[in-house]
Amino acid sequence: MTQPIHEEPANTEPVTLVEGRTLKPGHENDFYAWVQRAIAASERFPGNQGVTILTLGKEQSQARYVIHRFADKAAERAWMQSEDRAKLVQEAAAFSTPYTQTSSGLAAWFTLPDLLDTTPPKWKLFLAIIPSAYLASLIIILILNALLHGWPLLVTNGIVTVFLAFLLTYVGLPLSTRLLHSWLYPHWHSQF
Image (cartoon, rainbow, N blue to C red; front, top):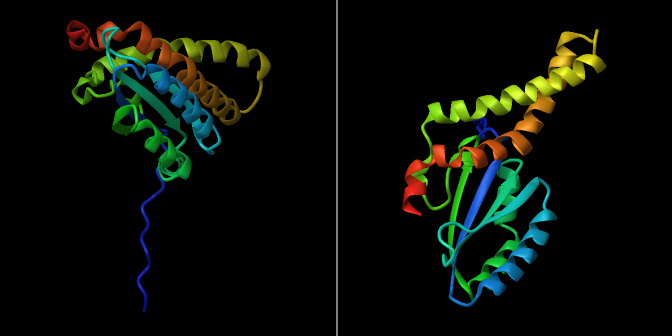
């Protein structure tokens, strides 16, 4: 008699991949040309939700970060194991040294690359999310109440939830972290 195979449940949370690079002096233009190729390559992968480029620290800092967002762990794994990425990593070795970090869930919005101990306390995350959630839900309810008046509660609640998740992910959380950055990361600000 054979035993059933127990597979791990699929991770359906969005995954953020932070690829840090320390540039060799004088190779900034090489990095930016490379980053354009990296963005174009990653956009062809299913589950890719966008790329952000960051330069942290002082103006002379050689640290650069390429932040990839994926729909889930499977999409991130497909990118990490792809020939396109392997070729890009090999190209980048000529002008930089790598650093990679991954995270999932809301912590990805609030953890600074290369500074793993800087995730704000949960009470700060809670307070940072409230204004975005409040405004997004208010806007959605005002608009959809006029359009969906009289619809069944479960249907309208489902529609509100989809719009709320979209607004928080693409507008609310990025805006909150940008506006509250010095409050969320007071130690980081004092270092730079």
